[in-house]
Amino acid sequence: MSTYLVTGASGGIGLEYCRQLQARGETVIAVCRTASPELEALGVRLEAGVELTSEAAITHLVERLAGLPIDGLILNAGILEATSLEDLDVESVRRQFEVNALAPLRLTRALLDQLPSGAKLILMTSRMGSIDDNGSGGSYGYRMSKVALNMAGRSLAIDLRPRGIAVAILHPGLVRTRMISFNPQGISPEEAVRGLLARIDALTLETSGTFWHANGEVLPW
Image (cartoon, rainbow, N blue to C red; front, side, top):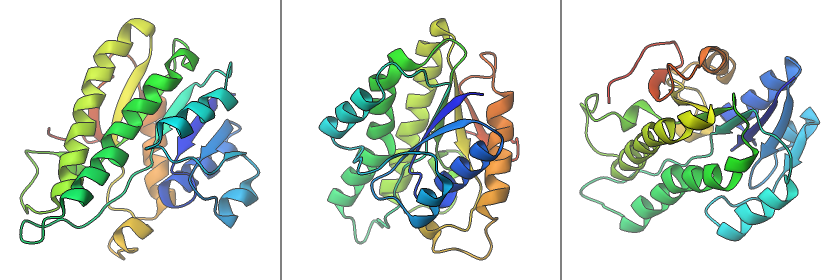
């Protein structure tokens, strides 16, 4: 049995991570701003009221988790806000950077001493953070923040290798969640997380720092 911490756990992919990890016997710590009834019903350890852009909130979370080894750190919390060139909202771009790129890096640093050798760090990113794959433009805040997260993941893979910690940079695919208004063309969270967990289970130091689709495809930077 391993211990996994999942951020953004109240719904969508985060909730499904908690559900599937618990079902296979793992210990789950669910971190979120506001707990959903579905998350509360799982009966996993719940750390609600955590705003990951707040240094004080991160500090208090780490204090509550003091001394607890974390085998899998799944940094899933994120936001998507529309930001076009014609209607550029700089505050929205900044907010997406804070949530999507800086918060995962800050939490990783704060929990670093609780990640043992053999632990796995999972950064939930998006194909929209691929520069080579950008054929439609727009979405400035989201795209830019995910590119930044991807770069952080590559650097973390290098910096954490001596500690024996592997890093996966994962795109879940198009998933029917609230973030994309439950787009009917998307796959279910259940299917997405099955693929994501397969990538996590297969992750090694040799493959650390790879940008993967949940289906196993290696994505372009």
